[in-house]
Image (cartoon, rainbow, N blue to C red; front, side, top):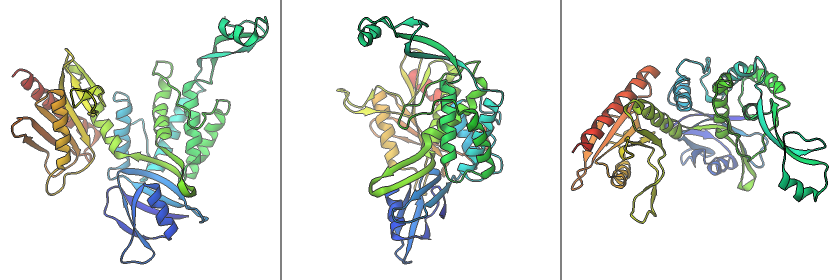
Length: 406
């Protein structure tokens, strides 16, 4: 198996690859791949914002290419950002242990296996599941309409609906699906795989999910509290899994995090948490925002904070990109100006993952709108990062209130 190690958004590297393998990487769209003009038989590869590991099966070649893409931030920091987005009150206590792993997939496999052990080590959670079926005895209630439609007046069997107390519930189905998925991924350490196989045996009686089926929904309760960390990771595994057949017989299998989404989710959830004590409500990926009066041009700001009377007071957008020598991208300013115009706000906020300066602001000519660009240093410790987010939220609220009083 040929392995290529890359770092997200790092300078491009040249690697010896066959033409078929290079073209496969182009078709997979996981990294940028172009033929090296200086070294025949080599391809120039550059990773973007996706991190993780995938095996690309090249048609006509026996061995797949394994791409391992590491994040710029430490693995522990990545899992903090991810975990805080899932559960801001429950993931600050170091529950997600990534051990000594320096790659995303082994660390994820280790963390998931530990959480599953904590969840099901004392036995599988049980609960009530709504069940419908046919029976010779009445149990629960009779589905009268279905009885008439299917039985044409016959007394038996009876179409019934009842609540069954079982282990085959949404929580366990998610854990089984994520465990199955993890066992199929390349690069899972042997010891972790062996423990996952043991846990998979405990979940053997749980109904597997059908590929393409919508993930079952669950809600946090006191009864499933020991499952919650594992369930958050299970959803991340199932949503980040990459297994698909592409044109030309190309197949990829692996797991990828999109750092754009990880950063965006963290910033928005952290802002919502920091602003919760000020009244109003924070909305992520706000709907119902339109640029034009006819409401044909829809917009989706990453974060909008509405005051207690329902009026928008703060708009923010998260950008996982560093400022360049010449400053931040102009296109981001145009986008934020459109958000401010549509929401009737005179100030907007762009939050970047690190940058050359901690804060820059621009007053738009004629309109008077002020657009703020702020940098967030992800190299800082989690507690310090949350303090930075709290300070940022306070500044946004201060400018919102001063604008509201004008």
